[in-house]
Length: 146
Image (cartoon, rainbow, N blue to C red; front, side, top):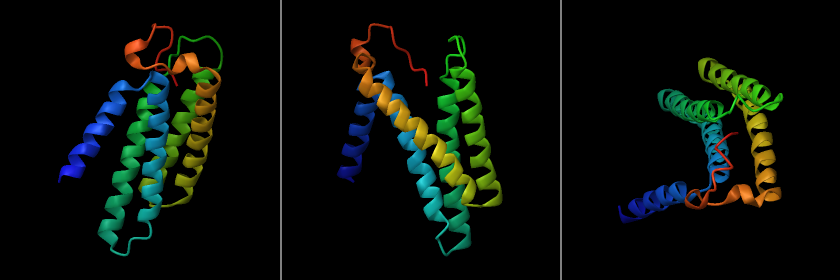
């Protein structure tokens, strides 16, 4: 299908040219997209498809949280890196519990935290536009640290 090729090409191009700050924002958005899809999957009538959709979307969300957590620069002074690490750990635990027990509530708790972090990150990018230059124009002063 031609549309699919164009959409994939556009998505790949937007990732390749995005600034590190925008990439982190895209990760938050992706995580929220997958948790929403997992929540919607609870409405699926067919048991196997329901569980498969919940599982697949929660695994994708977990992979994104792992990426966010691994991108933390723990050498930065202060409490922020450790606090974010623990928040991501908590989110990961909630997503795992939701998948294991097939419950919606842990997803909602994880979404709330990711949404707050996403909004804070977006606000930081708005207030610090110098951190939002494309990768090929980076001076090296900003790294992919969430």
